[in-house]
Length: 337
Ligand SMILES: [Zn+2]
Image (tube, rainbow, N blue to C red; front, side):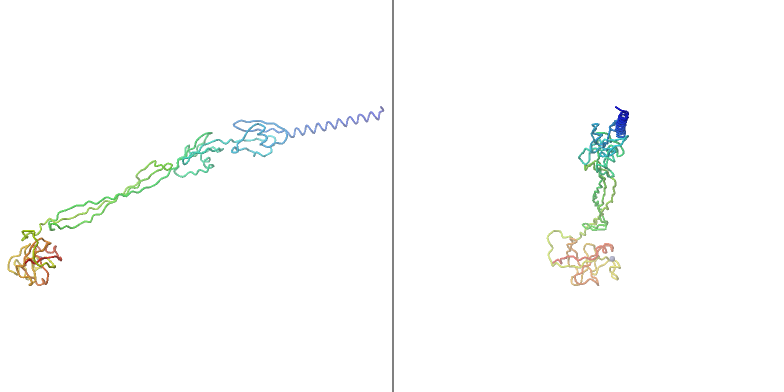
């Protein structure tokens, strides 16, 4: 082996050495740069995990045998490739039961507040609804949320209060007659109740308003004055004679009724008497008996009057007031044979 050869040998060896060194260096560098260390935050624990190469979140979790539900929130997203020093955070969804409208359902949620959980579950809470635990409360695994639907309804009841009938005696009114001096009006009691329903079942009922419209009494005056009884037929046998329709009026012996003929005597010369004396036209001679069923009484024609014509009969009353009260009536009368 000559010197040339020896030199060549050494050069070649050196080159191989450099080549190997470079290769090793590259490999070591590659190893250093592909080294990853990540932290997994799950279930209140921190798990460290080291590996080489590129891995997604899902791959790292699988390698650590950490299973996640779809409802669990994983950050970063499952398909993201991790860098060295990355932190994977898993927010576990917890099961919560929601009781509403007679049904319940179990949901998995990462929300902590009742209000948010209900919102996620699309349960709309109305003004009066009762929610337990309260809307702002936090829930734990396995907790139940109860929603009671509360409805309010107002019921109005009307009760008619019948009016009273009051009867009073009236001495200036003839027996058997009456008059209503005050019309009766029914009263009305109005009650407003507030009914509260819990999930459609009546839970409470209270009177919130009550109004009473008082009734107005009916006041009836009944005649107390005894009917004219003079000359009453002694029997109840029908009176025989000609029945006519008369225009009956009342009069007394005052100046207003009789003008110049006022006084205490009738045209026939005898003193008038209530229940007996009537004035009729000359068609009926003095002494003619006239039975008037309205009075159940037989009168006697004893008087005349300028205006007493045809079938008009003027009935004598002892006072002007009573004559006026009688007024003018169309009555039946029988001219007794
Ligand atoms: Zn008179």
